[in-house]
Image (cartoon, rainbow, N blue to C red; front, side, top):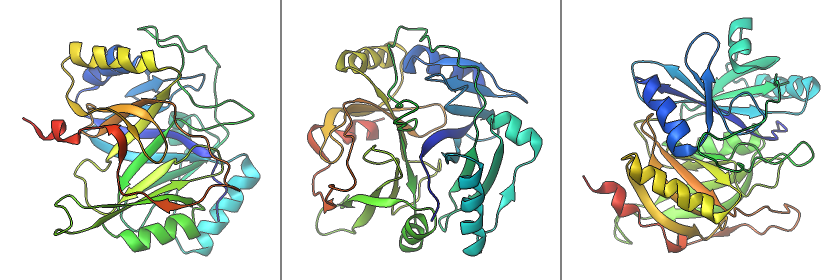
Length: 302
């Protein structure tokens, strides 16, 4: 199995880079810069970027970037993928430069989600200075990296995808939710929450249904509840669509709201996510998404 240490970045596609820049700075409170070769870097800590936005014909999610410790861990990970007979694409120098890494291989899981395995980020360590005054995004530090947050991906081929993520990519199961959108009389759609080798409750989740944009949502975390409230105000002021009201989740205890981003998936903006000891954590199935709040019906309103 691969020793993944965190969600390093996500890649999105957009028909309107200027809209993404305005959203990233004015709503998320992140920094932006032109990306090498075109597109946009969105910065939320000392890394050069955590969201890479590339120009394209669709508004969609493109890839999840997963980092390992060093070249030895990268080589070991590539060997695991080759041993599992996973088709690999080895990035050329141009793509490595665009992602700001030493090496990169990309591959797809059984549901077609693109993953990028990387090591050795390049960074000038320019201090993060939010254009709207966000104090800090929670990504951990050199001794306890948590990654940029989490991503939730569609997995119509659910069982094969779950096996691949656990047995090949090395994710552990954190919790289970069996989603029943039509109640007990309707179908059950499984959602598995998964962790890698850090303390974040989940860096990845998969949902047993298709999503047109290629992503259900990503999550970013701030260090205080007032920062969540200010983001809610900025969202409303900028006319961004609210997808779920403020609430607190049962499994990772995150207090958050959801809004639509310009690449047509949701961003969960939260505070207070659980950090777990995986030697003590007990996997469970939770039957309610939130302790309070999180009315997702608002996102269905026209």
